[in-house]
Image (cartoon, rainbow, N blue to C red; front, side, top):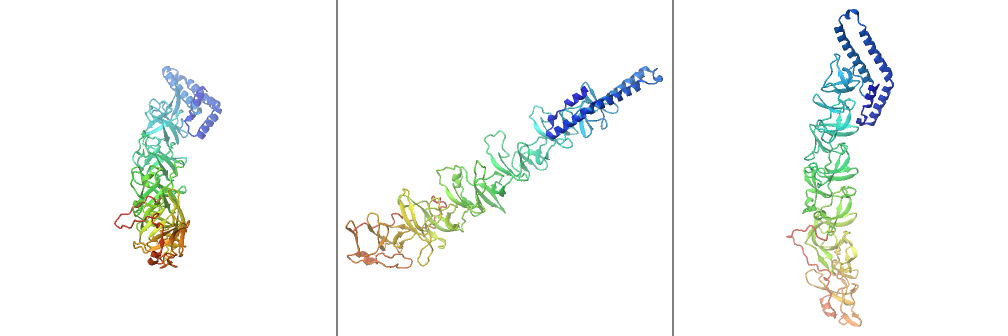
Amino acid sequence: MEILKKLYYNVDVSEVRNTSQRSQKLTSFAKLAKNVKKLLIISLIRSIMFLVMQLGISKKFQKEKKESALIMRKQTKIAAVVSAAALLALGASITSFAAAKGTWMMVDGEWYCYDKNGDVYENTFCSSNGKEYYVGDDGMLVRSSWVEYDGDYYFVNSSGAKIVNDWRLTTPYEDEDADEEWFYFQSTGKRADNKKILYKGSTFFFDADGKMLTGWVTADGNDVVNEENAIDKNYTFYCDETGARVESGWVYTTEPSTADDDADADEYWYYLKSSGKVANGKQSNVKGQGFVFGNKDDNFGQMLTNWVGGTKDGDSYKYEEIGGEDSVAHLSDYASNGVVYYCMYDEDKADGHIQKNKWRKTWRPEDAYEEDEDEDKYWYWLEKDGKAYIPDSDDMKATGYAYDLGDGALEVDGSQFSFAKKKINSKDYFFNADGEMLSDFVNVVHTEDANVIDLGMYYFGGSSDGSMKTGSQTVKDDNGDSFKFYFGTKDNNTTGEAKGKGVTGNKNNKLYYMGHLVAAEDYKYQPVWYDMDNNGEDDTLFIVNQNGSIQHSALEYKEDGDILIDAKTNKVAFKTKNTKDNVWDKYSVLDEENADKLIINVEVLDEKVVMPINEVYDPATPDDASPANAQ
């Protein structure tokens, strides 16, 4: 009975990773204990009967005492072995071995397996009832140890049973000083070496030494290794800290070639598809969103963020982030043979998905790395498919100069540049070659299609607007002072009105020059000369008040009793209609002769004070693709 207890309590159930297996094993032990007395008594009785039969030998053997004594010792040994086998069968995890391979006997507290001749087995497995136990060099049962057998590796638990279909956390074979590793033992008990194992719905990888791998793993069908170089798009996977291959999930980690002790290495987001393979290129549906991942040697699988450019490569694109610390890249570089996306990155949400069908205000690629709030941001339009609108050469229909309304006057901002027109949500917007939305004032000095945009001054709203403005507009300069403008509301070939173009001449009895309202400044009334023929000479004279209203009567125009302009004395005549349909000079002084009759006692207005527009088209000058005010 003491032997049975020793066997029962020596079982190490903690080695069982699965709790249900542990419970089943303990239950079987309890059932076994219930029958221990009955089986023990039967075994002992049989042994004693056998001994009695041997002791009652016939008289013819009594004369040969020496021979008889030798026979008796051998028979006693056999009886003891049979009894020990019965006890072992009643013990804990070691079941019956007698039928399968040999018989067990405890000697000095250790178990040995004997063959039918009474010789001990060595360096082999003895099996019974589906379990196998290993005896070593001296025939002793091996417990809690590695076993090398016929070139394969096994592990036996504390009861000596070979582990099958289960895990073991232990030091590697013959290296007890090493860190413990996880190993898996297959249905045959063999250690999983250089293998991919599916366990409870998850995939695990083991190298040539049987160690479970984590992190980047390449399994090409021949070898299973921790990847140390680069990602193989067909055979490289990522295993989390439990060893399970990541599938349909994200990981944030370093590149495969990163040394373990490199604490400063950059980390990147990777997405592992349902197959476990690393996602690369443009992926349209990653949990409902589109993403772009690197597919070049130096960025393979990395989630790309901010400005992302794709260069045509056969039927697909090679993707990379545009911009960097020392970048001089322009979005226009991708206009003719590529594609551009903007992938918003939010560090808290680890987002990075492709932005679609919306406006985005951000830095140019060369400024995006620093994300310096002092640097200008610009508005870009992102199409329904996520592609940033970057005009190509065929879209460029006009050339112009950008202007800001600075300190009471327009100030040219940059060199001439080409731009394209695009209708978005029923509004007209204009973009330069880098896809930056134009804003503020633009003077068109060259056009290839007047139906797209005609020559003249246009206003595209403030920095957060960009739509072509029409009709009356009030714009503030850098000092906060307000200036009034009027831009055409529709295209009319007869009158010369063009949608969005600043009006020059009489519009609703108000006087404008390139859209700016010309009004008396220093006096209640003032005269102003215009070059209505655009021949470089002033040829048309108007009289305006401080509201910009055109005066057209033969009167004395006074202020505080003083005559500022006298049209009465000489009976000056004024035009009652436009000279031509497209020359808006109604209510101007009739002609040069009448202009000479006008008595003027005040300064003549200069219509170009607010609008000092002198730049002209230079076909020999390369376009500046990025005017500074295209924001």
